[in-house]
Image 1 (cartoon, rainbow, N blue to C red):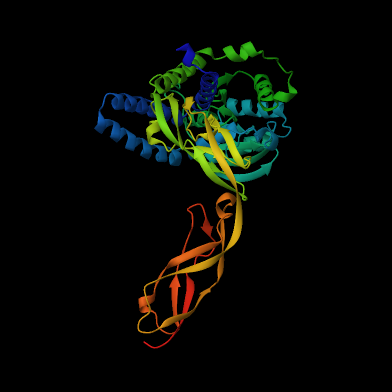
Image 2: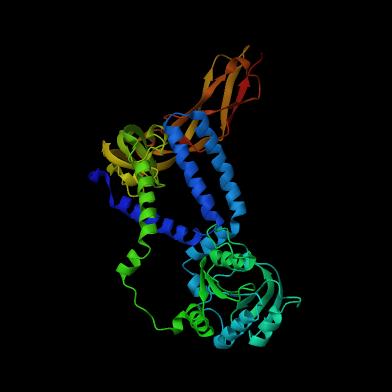
Length: 471
């Protein structure tokens, strides 16, 4: 088994494990994660039923998978767009690099705890690098500094904008009275109401920091990445917001590679194990080794050259298939396509390599027999040849041929120099004299003296026959 593992396989497992863990980290508290788990289960059932020969069940699951794929794209388009944004390597160059403009966090934190003391519910969303706009409903546009008096008046019970959340972007209140998506987590405490579920639900879908003030209990909490923590004082809230919104202004903590690798070790091991099992399912049941007959073709022949001969015309190629998901090479259109741009007149030897074969991923070449092709190249020339009409039969009555004229009298023929050099004329098709009368003009096509020659005149020639005497 070790001899079958290539360095590409190890890189394949590492890359897919990293991507799978990132998807798990982003979607673990969202509806998309639950759907993804269901899809993985269906895929597993599909492979089991297909290998067991349950044709109807596997066919239904295959068709259902196509429909589900389209539905997932439509239903979870926002989550997919967010994931693609997170994958983008350029977002740190073109996106925002901090949590917004300067905010008086001490004043804001004091305002939040005054609201809690007065049992006034509130939700304050702080946008960071990822925009929450795709998850916001309704909302009234504002553009003001988030000072304490304004925030207290916005959430005061009975005011038009008190119901919903305010959105803080780039140090300013951008929206008020926004409705947020609810969390789908089932393990939340039972006393959490709509306000808490909305704040946690938004934090599950983007990297926003959400401050939640409970109206029933007068408590202050912070929702980050789907997790909720209770804050005990205004000083603690200000400190937490400072670290979350302006991390570059805090003292940088050096994280070693070892710490990065072993952080969240459990989920990382599980995702790696899932990827490894998937790789084994795909690769261990290999398609085996096949020998196929591959025709040899050529391209990039110089304009002044002609291919006279190639030996052999096909090759026996032995292929190894690393996955049963790949069709048999016998069903693939495999061709050895050789480049003739560097050939010279005379005999040339060209090697057949893996690069000359159009193989899909997962198929490698183990041997090629023969591994070389001999081609004979001649110089191509063009030469004018006189047209000689071919006449058959006899003229009716006492007529005699006075003159035979061919229009045109000569044509240009192209071909190898050693073939065309000894030819001076070219014949026409047979013209029957039995049907000829005075002034007859017959049309006849030209006959090539050799299959290696090409006549640069596609139209039939005109053969004019002038006779004398009476019929």
